Amino acid sequence: MAIIKCPECGRQISDKAPVCPNCGVEIAGKIIRCPQCGEVYFNNQEVCPNCHHITYVPRQTDNDRQAAATKAGEQTTTRTQQSAMTPPIPPTASNPAPNNPETHGKRKPLALIVSLLLVMLICGLCFYFYNSAKENKELEAYEFAIKSDDPLVLQTYLDNNADAPEAHLDSIRKKLESLKKQDNDWENAIVSGSKTALLDFIANHPDSEHLPEARHKVDSIDWADAINENSIDAMELYLAQHANGEHADEATTNIKQLKSKTLQPEEKSQVVSILRHFFQSINAKDEDALQSSVAPILTNFLGKQDASRADVATFLNKIYKEDITNMNWHLNNDYKIDKKEVGDERYEYTVNFSSMQKIERGSAENSQEVRYQIKATINADGLISAMAMTKILE
Image 1 (cartoon, rainbow, N blue to C red):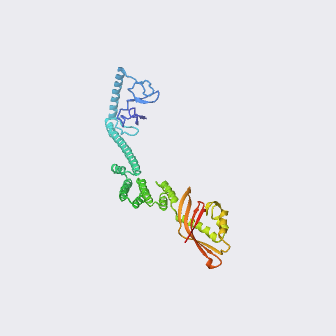
Image 2: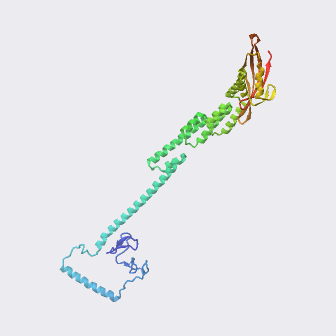
């Protein structure tokens, strides 16, 4: 006995099997092995299907058939006589029972069982691959849905994957609820139109698709407030809140324009300090300090055009007569300051104010008080560049 491949279905079977248990085709006595290449095939084929070697099957003549029939009859008579004289021998492994119809009948259920098992195996494999494909499809749908912010996509996943893993369904439900809450909060913020509601939405939903629009609305509200106030502080507050805001360039321009027109408290303090330093230097008769408070060239100083610092020093020495023992200039706090832009964030200040000059001489009755109206110009470098004094007659 040898193991061969069924020429019909290719299954491994015995060459003595009556039929193939897989496809049912007859095997015993119906096959031949090619002497050329060893291929097993049906003996009714004229050539080997592999190498096309011609099949040789001995053919019986009429005489051969008659001789075979006579011999078969003699063998049958002999076996009958032997059977009458010799008790039957039970079949063993070394002496198998003769091939009979009952044996063939017993083999048929075995073939059916094998076929049934094969069918079950195929069905099991089909179910496995179907289930695996279904799981992969569900996983792809879940990964797509969990990355989406579209409620319709999430709801479609839930409708089409009711038997998905509970963890997947729970994640999708939570995200869908979050998106619904987000939409509700957005509608409330839009309806209220308040900056507080918009800021709350931004804080609570940092990944929302409405975030750019919410920030735009907050930017617009803050800019409207800054425009309404139209002050340097308001513009600077807008820039502090929106360094890269939609109106940042406009706010910067407005600050520059407001600064060119509006005198700031610190600027007034600086102007007053420069003027006080000038008159305190006169009171102290400090020539160096006096000259350091004026520009190298003054466009006009007490009526003299293009006056120098030396001219200012001459003025100091001229007003101190020999009989003057003390001089004190008191500046009244009635400053009127005009501001003018003379360069990129460089400003010139024109100041109008009054001052009282108190002169002391040897005796009290000779003391004198004179009031002046003064106009001075302070350049962008913080130096007095022009000055005019007019005595006010009482």
